[in-house]
Image (cartoon, rainbow, N blue to C red; front, top):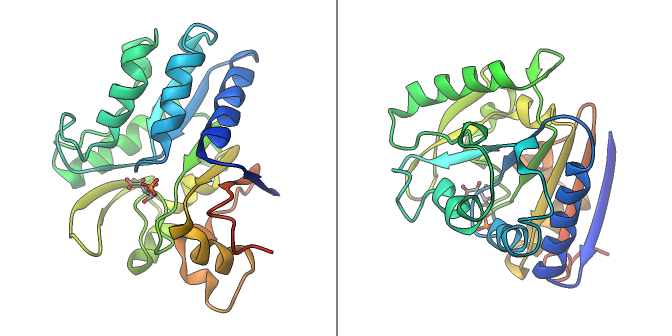
Length: 239
Ligand code: 6PG
């Protein structure tokens, strides 16, 4: 596994670089299966793609998936799909069949099974696991990634492709892609910004005692690249 850390001046510079990578991917042959992260960080990436690359990219080559979804309807402000739809999908010419949203409105356990089957049907396998061309991940201050939280580390080794998780504070149900699928992506990019993430990030990157208790520390691309893309605030405690 190739591991790289890149620090950008700010979130906009990071997102412009990622958007340029999307453009670069669009110039190569074949379908690109991309798993989008949730939370707020991807918003600026979506805006850059929608405003600066909407007519530069052949979007028919891209299939969008999600690393996780809150168990809410797709028009709920908490929905990761709603964020992507409003800031990106409504502004680009992408076939509807290329959008693979997690049905947050469905029964979570049934949706986790359905989504796992959809991934298995569409994604090329790597060692028997559905493999994304590009997996975007965020990280919470508690070191969670996707919706794998520190109190649910078993999801990192689940035999299932997709599982139901519970937010440890709110109890909100989530559907999340599990650890082995995360680790079998060809390219994993953490996009982490803001000073609030700096301490956890420092512990992970410096491999401080106990760092492996953070789910984000357990992500490694078994047959690809692991990239930590940070802004200066998030990287402020990394020597
Ligand atoms: C979610 C995410 C989650 C997110 C991190 C970072 O559904 O919330 O998938 O893993 O990426 O919590 O979120 P921010 O980008 O908002 O800091």
